[in-house]
Amino acid sequence: QKEVEQDPGPLSVPEGAIVSLNCTYSNSAFQYFMWYRQYSRKGPELLMYTYSSGNKEDGRFTAQVDKSSKYISLFIRDSQPSDSATYLCAMNEIQGAQKLVFGQGTRLTINP
Amino acid sequence: DVKVTQSSRYLVKRTGEKVFLECVQDMDHENMFWYRQDPGLGLRLIYFSYDVKMKEKGDIPEGYSVSREKKERFSLILESASTNQTSMYLCASSLGPGQGAIRSGNTIYFGEGSWLTVV
Image 1 (cartoon, rainbow over the protein chains, first blue to last red):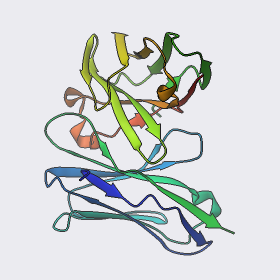
Image 2: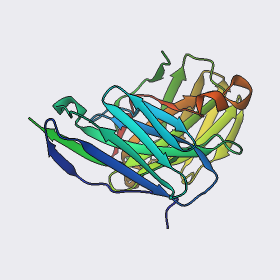
Image 3: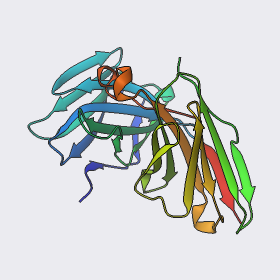
């Protein structure tokens, strides 16, 4: 079993829809949780990061962490065609190596 | 803004050639990484460096080596390229523990990627 599981999609929704992207994980020591966005033929760019459980909002994006369920989500409100990209979740522990563990990435397409 | 620059975006090499992928970061980060990204397999860590001349194997180091002679530069070397090394290679950097990494959640910053085709 992988440490981090992410549905690879592809996921296709109409413009304006609310999008929910999710990851589950098995390592209870994970404390920091990140979402990266990757456009085609580009490197991933950090979208949001959160620490421990709870919600964090940034514009149309909300990151949610439920440590009791080992489940994280990224919500996109009023989705736009420019949101079409691959979204990767990533996480790591406070202590230990500086390496992130990544999900496979979900390919999202927003249709005009 | 953090800038991680990969000098070669697209390369085509022959089987058996020695290949160098260069990466430079401009934020004085202690940590640097090389990943490869393949469809269906996600991002896989090849090597990690936490200081000049220091390196640590990642999940898939076989067939690769690295060099970090200066803090800002981290090179990935394919000693004898093979067709199964055709992939997108991503360099990344992050703050180290002594640089306040924990406050930033150990956030990693990526370069644009290098697309390598081995024929």
